[in-house]
Image (cartoon, rainbow, N blue to C red; front, top):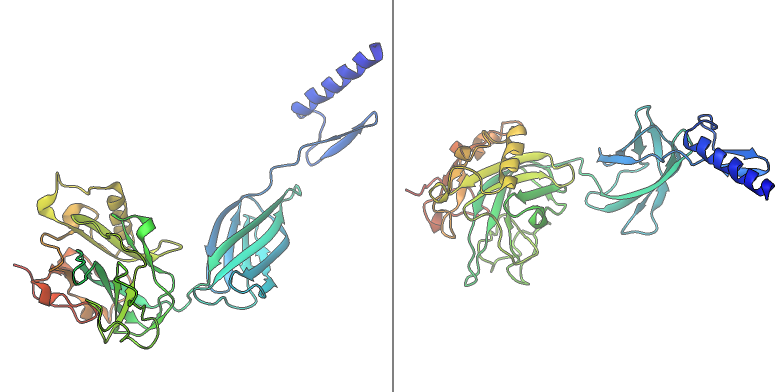
Length: 357
C-alpha cells in the first residue's frame, strides 16, 4: 500500500511540474520516467490567415508563422483528370507563394490542397477553392440605371455598363448595398471590345432570355429593353432589386472587393432626416470614395433620384470624355441626370441627354 501511495505522489508531482513547464525544455515532446513514457503536448499548428489570388499562375497564402511544405497540389473541380504539384517558396513572415506550372483558365474553378508544418513539427492540412484569374480585365464603367418592374410587358430593373478597353469581364461583380451581397450579380467570362454596351437585366424575364456572351448579340429580339446591337445579360432570379428610395451600387472585384466604379443615388424628397437608410449604404459610399470613383460619402453627394421609376432612368453624361481617361475615372453626382421620359431610356445604346424637368 505504501508503494502504491508513493507512486501516486510521484505521478502527481510530475503532472504538477509539467503544468508549470519545469521539467520540459523547449522543443522536447516526450521523456521517460521510471519506465513511464509521458508525451508532451505539441505546439499549436500554424493557421492559414489569408489567401490572395495574384494572377493566373500565382497565389499567396498567409500563415501565422513560417512553414515548411509537405504536400501541395492543384486540381480542377470540373475536370477530375487534372491534378498537378505546385512550385512554392515561403518567406520568414509566413507568406507561402504558390506558382502554378500552367495558367488557370478564366472563370474555371480549382482547388489547392496541401499540408504544411511549423518549426515545432506541428502540421496543418488545408484546402481552398478559387476561380481562374482574369489577367486581361476589360475596363468597365456604370452607364445607366433603371429601377422599377412591370409584369405586363414585362420590364424590370437594369444596369447598363460601357466598355472602355478590350478584355474579359470575368471577376466583375455588381453589388447593391441596399440588396446586400446575396443579390450581387457576377459577370460570366466573356471577351468584350472598347465601345460596347452591356445591359444587365436584374431579373430573369422568362425561359427565352439568353445571356449573350459570344459574338451573337441578337439572341433576345423579343425581350423588352434588350438591344440587337449590344450585349444583354440576365440575373437568374425573379425578386425585386435596387433600393427604391436610395442605394449605392458598386462595380467591384467579387473576390478582393476592389471597387472600380460606383453610383450613389437618393430620392431627396422622401428622406426622413438627411442620411442613408442603412449602415451598408454608408459603408459602400465610403468604399467608393476611398477608391476614388465617387466624390463624397454623404447622402448630399448622391444623385437626386426623385422620379426614378419604370419610365425614367439615371444616365451618365461623361462617357465620351472617359475614352482617354485613366482609372479612377471621373464620377460624381454632377455627371448623372434623371432622364426625361420613357423614350429617353436607352439600354444598350448611347445615353440620352434629355433631362426630366
